[in-house]
Image (tube, rainbow, N blue to C red; front, side, top):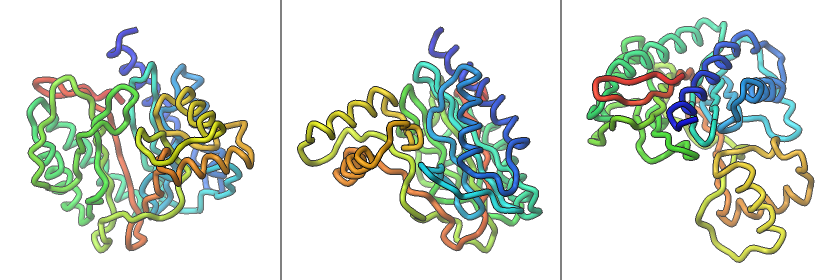
Length: 295
């Protein structure tokens, strides 16, 4: 299978799974149950999760996945963002959906989806990323809402989910241009008009990835754990929930590797004023005169 075929197949699987998610989400459902159902569905369709299923509730905007022993449930009337990635041979499709019956959440979701549609219509070779941000901001503002200014879309490369180029959700001075043949995830995050429109670090991470840098000499046990993580996840994000052999000793070593900077932890990101956030996301391949929506 060629790289393009792998990417398109990853996108097909991501689309199928995303379309199933609204029927899976229910109030009082344990987050770990939803995450594991979604991840199992990706595997059942022939893909691999490119990162742990993110389930971000209400003011939590991104980077939350249930960790080992997590007992949190989905509250009634919640604004639930489910962000998934599918990987085949290193090629990644990234997509997200907001599920909610809350009237405010429904309005936020619609604004995010409309902003995403308008942004995708603009995508073509040579378009500035700042122009994409301006369109997203304009559409979201028409609804009386705010985009999250410090969350962005991102370029995707093989085995590299965040590959350098960022796609802003607000106007910026960034003159970087989209390039034909390159792959990008566009993902508006939308909150209320009286919110800060900014996310802050909201807690200890449950999502990690190996960093190439870091200080300190590794012990034999630390090197063994780091090697296992590299072989199992190929540099992509993971959660300790995926490590069935996770015990007190592995947790201790993992924590030390994180503190040494050998592992990156993705902090849970929360809207600064505690207001609800909605999200919509697609992955696209840029062409000379437009784009192909992979997901």
